[in-house]
Length: 268
Image 1 (tube, rainbow, N blue to C red):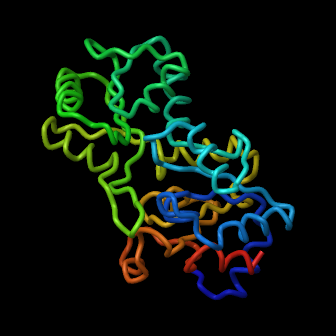
Image 2 (image 1 turned 135 degrees about the vertical axis):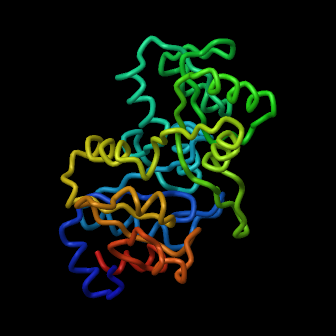
Image 3 (image 1 turned 180 degrees about the vertical axis):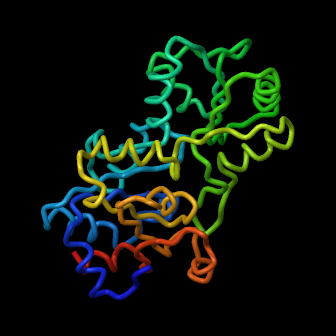
């Protein structure tokens, strides 16, 4: 793990694309960090590109584009990636023509419908678990019943908590999956960070070689772990979930650790 600023600056010379997490990295909830625009402007000034990738499957891609727009960050659809995109791509290749029971917000259900999926809450082929901020006992009960009956079961993002304003956290998709596991004994394959499917998706979407890509985020078990064992550079920021004292004992280590992306702006 590198913390020396001059060595980090040298490492950045080969990076052409930055993949940024959102909550805890560029903002908390609806509060944009004061240094975010400085960092993004520096990326553009140096002829590089930036993309956003969020594991948060409670909103659709357009909602994130609009949220960024309100913060003065204007991006194309190609620059915005959501964990939902990764699983939809996989399902299109491996489960085309099947039906799904999606545990998720109205926005997540719309994303599946817009992708051509038949949503079925009676006898689906597949159960999809997302970050459902509208979770009800009825939805939970149905999902568990389908899973016990042997339906294929996937999860979108494994995050245990979602950071919100004021330094607080709310239960995320991974926590809901643990609840379902307690009832059914089944745990899903997840498709967001740190799944290798997400890394492959990012490489295809950007068109860059792994050694030209840096992934920046605040979570060890998602943002940093997704790059583990690859040539992609992982950069941990301490502006969100992970605390500095937690890093040394973690089985996955970042390539670089900094306090926040504002520091990185000075090193490009």
